Image (cartoon, rainbow, N blue to C red; front, side, top):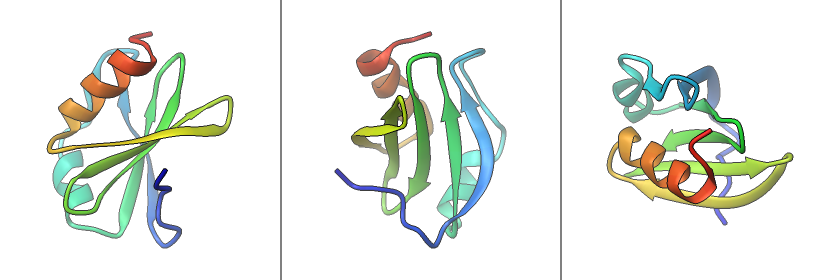
Length: 87
């Protein structure tokens, strides 16, 4: 399972299952490089970054359980929510 590269700056939570929202400009900011963002949900927390695709390191109870990848942040949200819960 791939982990978040240690050299990335965390720009804070930019994705949330609370309102199923992705902050405006987040895709472009991640694609520009050098940063990662948080993605909060009831059943998991993820760190999301760009490395030729969007990647998300999924954690449950502070344990890295999976790393997923997709072409868009919406796809990351859809995959993570399907696997780990919509809450």
